[in-house]
Image (cartoon, rainbow over all chains, first blue to last red; front, side, top):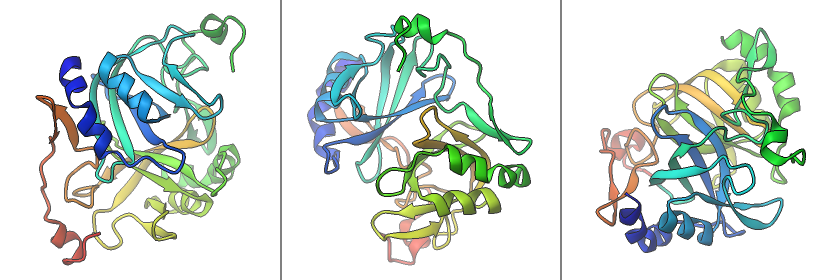
Length: 138
Length: 138
């Protein structure tokens, strides 16, 4: 699949409508379970590197730099499929997530939901954040 | 569930980190199949109405107005669960989608993917757009 996606990179970049900051939204889903893991941002270079390498790259708005998912935490994402939405300002990445997607040590970033009228953590921490970032968690 | 979510509305609004335009990203997923249907935007009022009514409301950036999903197209979304992400700038709506989510008449907006090196439509049109918008499709 990766070579197939690399061949389509030019056409995909042409179909994307990057915003005023040069970004599109990236929804990230575990390919086999359907879990929505996180929402992140990609610029043109992050899209290109992801399609060409099969490793998932994002643009960090807070750090203003490209980052490869897992480069510090070792919780990598391998690209399985790359979907473009109807108006080209969002993509859906189907990935194979190693370990946890969230910097809090949970599988998914979307871990809070209303239960009994209170916002409640419904996904457990399975990796201690200090194991992900050596005590330097964001 | 809806009454439970309405009771948590104040706490959820307090947990959200609206951006400079007063918006959070909303990833929308069919609750039982796991299909990611669309990505949209919500302001404070859209979140409040959604949690209080169980019908899903968004903020349209292009039309600069609140809209209830399906108000024109009749392709409504009923809220099943409301998840908040780790940093509060994105939510995940689990919904029950009537018909199609995409204005092109496809179940999901994320219908294009690389196949054989070409960006290809992988989800069929199941409702003609003119049936959704009376010939006035966006």
